[in-house]
Amino acid sequence: MNRDQLGFRRKFGVLGPSTNTSVQPDFDDLRVPGVTNHYSRIVVDNAKAVSNETFMAGAWEISDNTVDAVKGVLTCAPDYLVMGMSAVTFFGGAEGADAWRRNVEEISGLGVSTGADSVVAALKAYGPGIRKVAFFSPYFPTANAEVKNFLADHGYETVRDIALQCPSWLAIAEVEERRTIDTFKALDGDDVDALIQVGTNISGIRAAAAAELYLGKPVIAINTATYWHALRANGIQDRLMGFGRLMSEF
Image 1 (cartoon, rainbow, N blue to C red):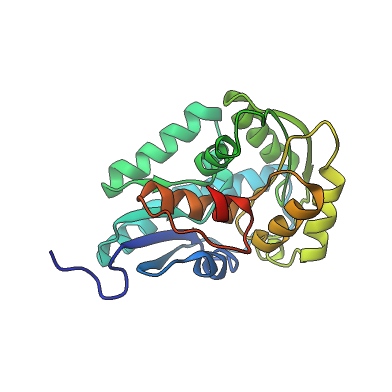
Image 2: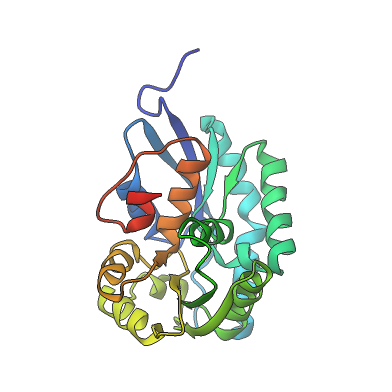
């Protein structure tokens, strides 16, 4: 069987909002030999003056426009799809997340790694001792509530959460690494088993790895978790150093 010259192990179709400028470089940094990433933009305007209501409306707009992005990336005959957007993948609890993923799978005929599923898989990889978590997002409180509900459906108690309430989609990518690290510190405590960063337009892959070292507990960045999940779902067991224990040990 003929294989792609560069993507001879797997070609990943990656779907992300057109306003997202972090997923592509993050996923490319996590790429391993023989795997290629092929991006398809989910067209969405840069929402401004974001509030609880407009954030949720914008997230659903991204969801509604996902089908066109799926159809576009299918023209390069990918082997698997990787979601470079996370908010809507948490909505509706475990049942809603499963339904959303199945819809994309049915449209594409391919397997899909979503941010929500990947976070749960990552928590399980760290072992059964992880029950209490804390997380932060660039979202607004209504969206954070959806994340908490999803995690609860999978047996994880959210002890604390922080919604950074970024004022636009583009502003999410402007969250500085120092702020990410400080937010992890603010979330941490003896009552927390693991920390999570959600929101794919925050580049947290290195900050999370650093936080794991100085906090001494699992720290999961959603872009790391999603790409790790895609690799492992395709039987690719390569380990990468510098991106936390998830990529180097599991």
